[in-house]
Image: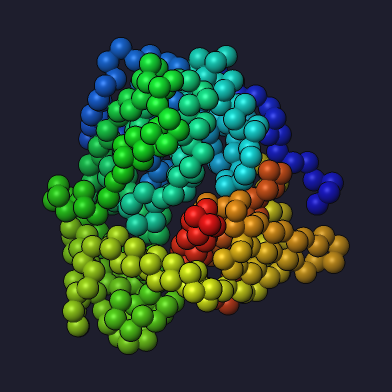
Length: 415
């Protein structure tokens, strides 16, 4: 591993090459036009680049919606390192800035964003949630965001997208039909950036980025009649709402059920859950999701949360390919993560303390493993490498691991 060349994170971003712009439009506009994308612009009159554009994050089509929203202007995009895999030349020349997720004190990223705004005079696009939404509601955003925005001293715009999650949730990935909408709002003007505190900036941003895709679906009577619309939902709703057994949930077609007590729900065409036996405790998916978070929070507070499993580990040091590191062990407690691999030639011990992780990146049925097997993953990064960690014996654990990471960080921060 010491001989492998790592991704050059120091390389400055560039303006998108002129000959790539038509390609970007050709890849974006057919998809957004087909789905009838409508953009509601608020307080945007007269605003010209450069400015910071903060976007909600639901799926890959987010990038296409963003391209449509900022037309005819172009931008620099903060993109996770796996987005460069196999196409680094293209990603760099489209104006992308590489980032390893959930790494503390990333001064290089700060400098690249500053360079994009001040030297390249570009709209600079950031997805502050850093991960696709699991339940159609916002993910955690770093408290340092407001401080960073205040230092940059540029207008701040939020692009809150609707329908993207409904079209292809991360736990399902099957294309569904449905309209796309987006609210594009200048939440902080150039004059205000100097007068608002970092806390006030964070408050405005979080309010503008708030969303609930299942409520949006119900309110707008968006019918999703895909025959397999519920498949994969058990990865998000992993705990039975009746017997409270964890990791015995299954889902297929339009139903989700507990294999321990047998309770079963049907998901209708407006996204609501209806119990087929017993009471319907959570008809709204985010309510069930948040119930599980509260259950995990209790474990963190009671010091009873603990995860340990044998894992398979891969490294992504650069944009060329994943490097297999073999088998190992992952331990997670409220104190943080500890990863150890067993290869005597390339042993790895990685510790990420809770104080350095306000959240953690997870993947459902990730498809880029070396052996091409689909599997859930926990992803931990340093400033120099990224490790994809696949539990081998315990199923559907990653959503709870993410809850535990976020709740442990909140406890640490409050103390």
